[in-house]
Image (cartoon, rainbow, N blue to C red):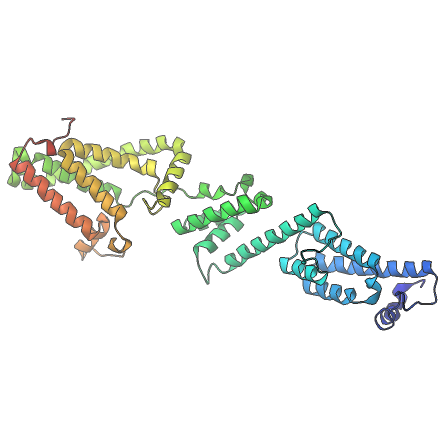
Length: 400
């Protein structure tokens, strides 16, 4: 009685085999001595549980708790309630524990029953449940992050991006290879954090779950100068048909091509100024691009609508000025076909060699067979109108 630690094995035998400290098995000691012994045993149990949970020994923690909770001396209401209060405070004050451990402890003490009475304040009990949900959520994200390489997915990429919030270097490297499906998964994760787990927002810069939008960047359409040069060359050639005739126009085609290239280079220089101007509209541009992706008008939010739409609108004005309604209709309808056509109609972005120039032209132009057919047909129609009906309003812009 005076030194429980020195007689630990005897006490263990007495507690487990003889059920000491129970109303039906009293020992030859005073009430005060029995109280001191129970307090010493309780303190030793608490220290052991504290150490095991603090060091992450969850299985040993639960085994120890399950073993002791079956001992008769802890069947006393006051001792059992004191043990439960200590456990709940231990979970509240410890940062790292897994949701499965907490759920097993709840089943052990029947806390998972709807009518269960938990010996702590309701606010604390709800806080524990929130932490359990948060830990389960973070555990799911960590699992997705671990599975990203063997089993890549948009959700796994988004989870990795969120968990790397404190490592901007790795974050930027990951964001460079992210595609539109991954950004959509980021949107879903950000909404989940903002609505279901606001307590976890501290893990993000400025407590903002939409931090990843700063990593999106922008993406210019491929071969923009080449495509603009081709369009301007055709526009110049068709515009000159009424005055020069077909043969002269074909003969002058290299000069028109040179003019188209020069005009495209001037447009590229103007584009740099337009890009600087649209920097102040970055947030609006991103929201507009997200809306277009959501409504399937574009396939990638990195193609910023305002930033890339300005040059396309300027090119439309030039085409309308030189070729009128027919030229503008050709330009707009060809673009609409590109937006509305099924994915199977889009040319594959495969490697090519200049030994196969048709394949190279097909890839650089980025047009499907339907766009090619429509574009060639409209060029023939505009050429016919220019030769046989010169001066008609169909090919005359109002600025002329």
